Image (cartoon, rainbow, N blue to C red; front, side, top):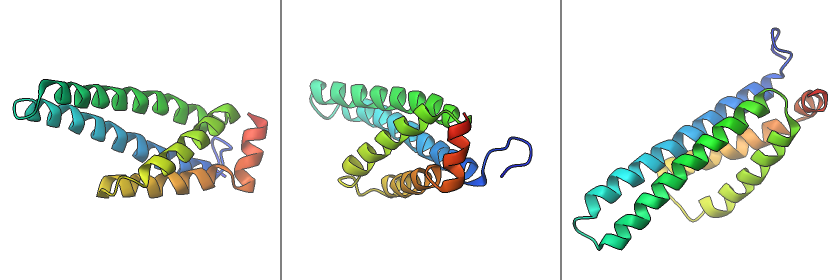
Length: 128
């Protein structure tokens, strides 16, 4: 446990792994925005619009996830459950994306999720 917060080390590590995942999501969203603006000239207008919308949606999801990650760090069980659902979705849809960033994010999400449900973590979330 962390001495100052009473938070188990597993929850703290999970928190930082989730932050990495959110950062990767933000990077992916920004890349999608910039790549769509560059490719709009080459491709049809509607394909560029789809990529821009995907980039914006990715950034919004990452920012919402960031809020939830901080609530999880503070011991909110509802946030842990929401992150579990997001992790399941990311694993289901992330398997189709075999990029380096996608693979790193997938590994981080799996480890972060397991850490949130270790016995020491469970006690922390019951108190919150």
